[in-house]
Image (cartoon, rainbow, N blue to C red; front, side):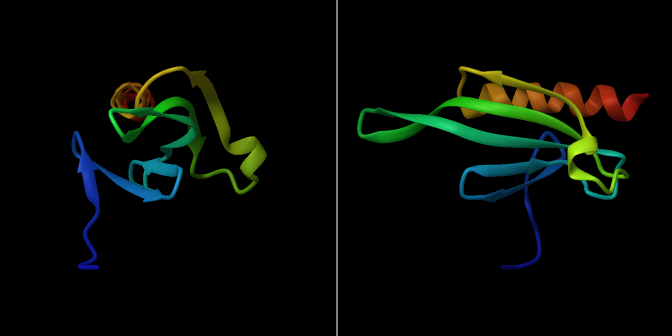
Length: 93
């Protein structure tokens, strides 16, 4: 790997199997997307259900780090759009 991350709307995306982190870990907040379900569409596996979680990166306890979360029946692009809105609102405060 060349040390660079994939990005979406200017923020890094780090994926490990069905877990995606969106944002800079050095910022006060990041978004964690957990893929909960997939469905087959035309022979391809597509995301069909996700959990989107806003995390406070300054909170050492993972349980207390959860700021807000939601479970949605949606694809990955919609989940990334939710993540982007949440992250930008949180970082603007």
